[in-house]
View 1 (cartoon, helix red, strand yellow):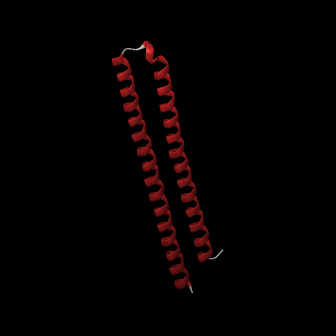
View 2 (cartoon, rainbow, N blue to C red; view 1 turned 60 degrees about the vertical axis):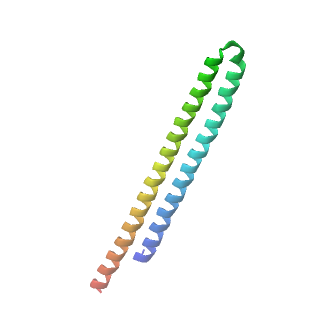
Length: 114
């Protein structure tokens, strides 16, 4: 396998890895958002069912607690997904740069040997 063919294959592999990782991150984010929506609906349903047994203050506090928990969950989800994207983009960029440099080095060595 010559240098250019190897470089092309390595670049394709790295790019495919990056795309697959991005799809996994997007699935994680989407699943997390769906989970948050389902939990919010369940919380509201439970509050509605138990509402007559609770005082107004307890209902208000429960609703506020749900908003706070949802906010923390949303921030954590966004932070982890955004962080994963940064890591993937950095690793893919470094791997592509390393492949490019290794290819240039190998071609320079081949020219010197000829």
